[in-house]
Length: 400
Ligand SMILES: *[C@@H]1O[C@H](CO)[C@@H](O)[C@H](O)[C@H]1NC(C)=O
Ligand SMILES: *[C@@H]1O[C@H](CO)[C@@H](O)[C@H](O)[C@H]1NC(C)=O
Ligand SMILES: *[C@@H]1O[C@H](CO)[C@@H](O)[C@H](O)[C@H]1NC(C)=O
Ligand SMILES: *[C@@H]1O[C@H](CO)[C@@H](O)[C@H](O)[C@H]1NC(C)=O
Ligand SMILES: *[C@@H]1O[C@H](CO)[C@@H](O)[C@H](O)[C@H]1NC(C)=O
Image 1 (cartoon, rainbow, N blue to C red):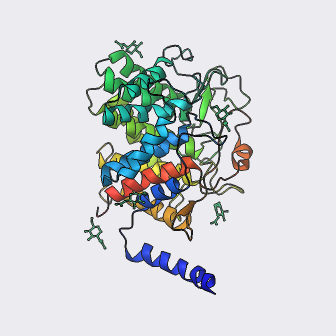
Image 2 (cartoon, rainbow, N blue to C red):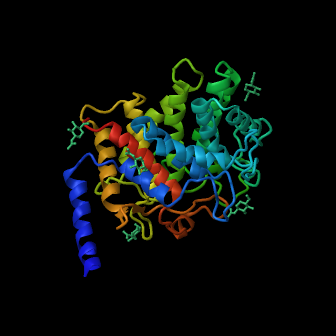
Image 3 (cartoon, rainbow, N blue to C red):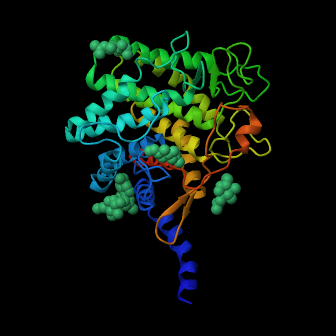
């Protein structure tokens, strides 16, 4: 009887809380839910320490939430998780492959912890990660390969994984290194020019960026003109957007080489991103080049990344809204869909996060059937990290 009463009552309580107290913090709720699931602790599913980019994304969200709330639980969670990866001498003890860009995503956390604690071990570990970029394989145009095994390929994902770290390292320890800033600018520019959508590709035209390209055009998916892949995958574009706003924030000034070029790309793509949202729900399709096609669906991690990027770009003045606030309204509309549809409250007071696709890779066919065949993963940490980031930005712009 007692249990029945509770299960009956809980949805009522939840919906009341959500609708009446418009100031509920989904950011805090997301952080708490992830922490109580023991996620983002630096440990992989075999119980071993590993540099996993998903953890780095969630830590980025906790870092920003800590800055806004001062709740030490968030800082301790980042510190304890990252401490599983680096020993007292600064040696990286978590496993990772130095010929991939993905593990570099935890680098910004190491630099953050150096900044907060002054402990040299974090500088040592950051410097080790930075040392991999020197010999990293590149295309003839200078783009880092996504991985050693993805020969001559530049993916949008890699811009977020590698270049936000590259930027923060440069800003922190080599702010006058013009060569490094110009190299970072090149990574954004080359990726952009090789993946910007053709108007006549037979798909819905968005003017946004395909997932990646193969400079050597050896992959079955590579186009004849620039070797680009055939579809626009929402999460890859989400990584690129987050990389633009985070890098501009790190650069901090139009005098830094690359700042104006990145801002120009952001200003061009942001209105196109808004135009590509589904007009009814306000969120974005998994495969953005084929909206409404059978098996395509609204995907939650890419959507959260877009909302984070748009709100942050507006807050920091990197983009300018129309006089009717088209961009702000679009971001808020998408955000409200996320909280009403993908947040699934549980009786223990946490919630499950839904509708994040597990992976998206150019290691295979790279076509529509591939993307829609990948399963959705409940409580995927990349998706939760993106929702945490979007929520922090949404809560920062309350009242606007
Ligand atoms: C919600 O937040 C706004 C802005 O911070 C504040 O003015 C308002 O009083 C808050 N409302 C409630 C119900 O707490
Ligand atoms: C700080 O965050 C933790 C974890 O989400 C939560 O349990 C705790 O209630 C928060 N403390 C305050 C003072 O809000
Ligand atoms: C976890 O990390 C260990 C090394 O620390 C590695 O051998 C193992 O393959 C990893 N497990 C998974 C599921 O990635
Ligand atoms: C500046 O950056 C370049 C490119 O990453 C690097 O090769 C060089 O070692 C850096 N210079 C200094 C003084 O650290
Ligand atoms: C989770 O999301 C998927 C994809 O949108 C949907 O099919 C499923 O019904 C959702 N589950 C719940 C419990 O809302």
